[in-house]
Length: 249
Image 1 (cartoon, rainbow, N blue to C red):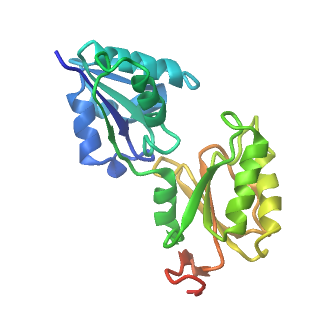
Image 2 (cartoon, helix red, strand yellow):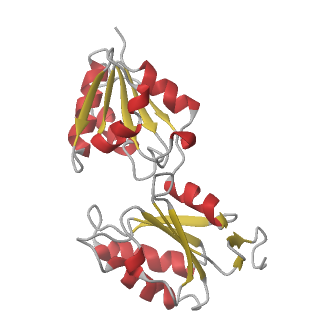
């Protein structure tokens, strides 16, 4: 029996942002692995005919190993992530785990894309990602802060619109403040900034600011902070980046 591992992006939270391909892949699986909050987000797609295997935050490696092993044993397996599984999600871990197996034992793996938080947040804000942009996580759990800041400086100097993931948490209250200081070295204080919290979930909240007025205390782990570039303007309640390089809207 040939198994299959499907790594699925469920979108930012609301079922309205799930793709049909993601829903079909969850429904067709025999075993569904995921962080317990992500499994709750797709509970309407699972049923008594399936085995649902929850795990805690920080258990990504074990979750991937268990999912790959189950698929190698012949099961149809779904491994779910929020957003897009290939952007700060489980796809990288799952593919690396599968690739470590001998080819004869390696199950087929497919990745189903999802709407990532930056895209959902940008849609609420208007069109801030209309041209070149970068995504950067401010979490230092998987990368040292020196590396994060080096990348932040490179993006700031390149005049790219920036989507910041994981900007702040109780255990990391200072990173967004430091990121604002770094960005202020490269961009003027009136650079438009948008904060979207709980995008696609209950309690969704959007705020507009500038680089000078950005209050890091307004952000949390579930906030996406979008920082404009030279071509980004605030048009009423919208943030819009001009599609022509160097032109302002």
